[in-house]
Image 1 (cartoon, rainbow, N blue to C red):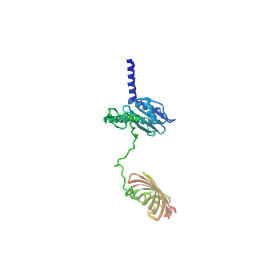
Image 2 (image 1 turned 180 degrees about the vertical axis):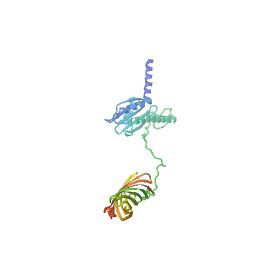
Image 3 (image 1 turned 90 degrees about the vertical axis):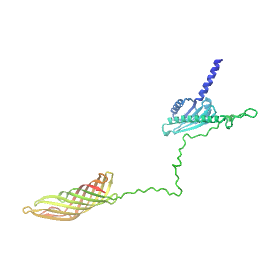
Image 4 (image 1 turned 90 degrees about the horizontal axis):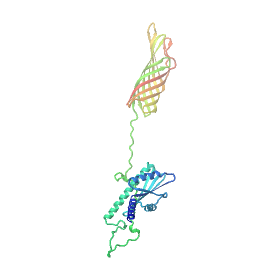
Length: 386
């Protein structure tokens, strides 16, 4: 007899301890979703909190009444219904307080695109369970401190009548605590009033400042060496060059260049003849390509030319003779400029010039030049821009 009594007491205590530390878990999902990772992770997290996990099969969308009913039939103090689909994980958590018959409901929602949905949902479920149990405990303490019966929804204290008998309580409504409103576990973030400023009604919209561009024009002074070929029978020529350019627009430059004296020497029957030429060019340049380190330009020019020949007419008498010719030229070409820095450039130009009229110079009884004249010039120089 005593043994039976001890067994009954032990079962009562064990059942109550199990009920106060058990959680009912119902995990469902769409047909193409694997729910096993969610169930395993939730079991692990609830177990780490000291809860026993009870599972049962359920429909795809478990409602609150079914969830609460299943939890009460299994004796669990909390229940979590989870549904997994391709876009999100939804959960409904029910938590009760056996000492006061009060309960709370929390909803959970995790978007699967956020990342590790299994871990995020499990951690949020544990935090929601902790918060709900703490809130129920504080609610019970407040009601106990105020002398209110936790099971009386009207909030009135248990008073005795004049005859000494307590008023009769009828129906389950006398022991039901209203369920607090649902709360969003992820409330929207509201900006502080200082962070949001409403512009005055009559205020004009702020105008964006117009960016000011620097002056598109600049000067370039460049000096260098000219090496070329005179197709009027004189062969190779060489000499210095000096140019000044003015950038009229971002892509167009105007300039003047002085080439010469361009020196050439020729041996004739009369002796050694020295030839020099000078060109004063007016140039127009158009940028064909502009990059950070290199610019490529097209060149058109018109120039006045001076052609001079001097030397010995007769070797025996060493008589000096000379001849001059003036004319003008037109030409085309291309130029490449390497931007060494913000102010220094290295330039190379290649030009073809045609002279009109072509000079015809005689020395003694021979011709030094013919009736055609064109120049092919290559210029290499270093320039400074400002």
